[in-house]
Image (tube, rainbow, N blue to C red; front, side, top):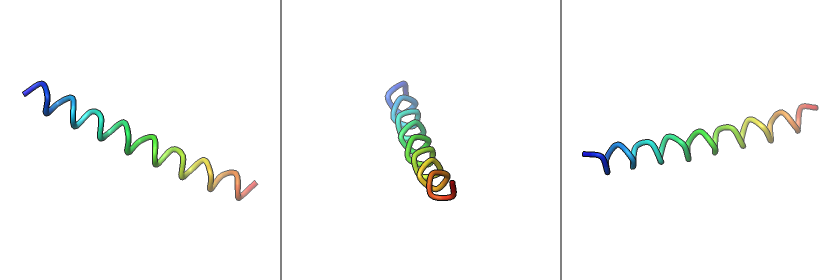
Length: 31
């Protein structure tokens, strides 16, 4: 059970990082 929660948390963290990087690059292009 704990492994599943840790796996979901890792996926959420990775997705959040990817989205943050994407928005960061987009913001740099706009400036």
